[in-house]
Length: 336
Image 1 (cartoon, rainbow, N blue to C red):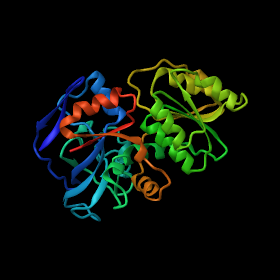
Image 2 (cartoon, rainbow, N blue to C red):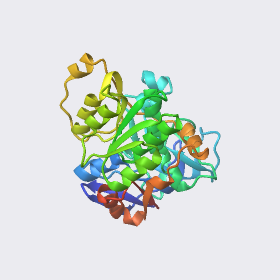
Image 3 (tube, rainbow, N blue to C red):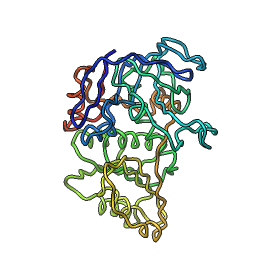
Image 4 (cartoon, one colour):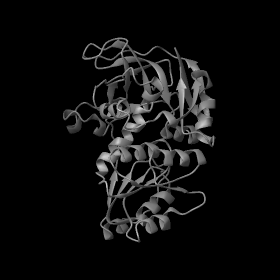
């Protein structure tokens, strides 16, 4: 089969690779669409595991089913992500494989979905897999994973309708966070980001204040919007030292900072700022596919406008370069 194989920074090639094997607890999916995630761009920019097939934001059709998998049939439309674990630790025994200390995930240690077919080695309906209703397109299906990340982060933050919330970063995750907040009744949402198209989508998604980070500093704007009190929750979806520092400066004493972004580089920080201001700083890494699909199906969120570009598999390098640098790029999909 054809797959996009990563060889180094800015070096990704279409190659013939072996058709994947189905695991007893897994399935084989014929890939219909796969999104390029910000975390895919990290190795593309800087280098990573040579020979890996990236891609984890996948939708497609079931073509093979492992002996232990129940509740699914060949030909059904699905969305899924998976990981390989030790199977022995406390978290594996509790069925929470996402917390296994030896976890490797799809596209990072497990061959991913920038390919004609992908093996989902652990197929679990619910948090990490779901059926894709006929009312949703495969393109919408490929947005379920990032939307699920946003939903998980918002649920962990437990926002109240009256809260003032800042979202730093207007990429796919940040825009999805805005939509989920809006769906939950939060109306005071401030978004800071770059690229005109993304800022426009932030407003359309439900933000009532949008700040161009290339032109303005979000910190005084957020303080003015709260009459000097500071914001209740910050979702840090940008992953830079500057936005991390802004999070601390904006949130009020006793507020929450949700770290959702993956950071490319270490940052210097002073824990005393967190302690002295009684701030909750919460890392967020989880999924809820079933609830996410239901949000899309019920029209409570809409990711269609967030899909900005689509490319065939043999144009994978162009797709990555577009996601990385095009001013109008939001979510770029690859369709084998």
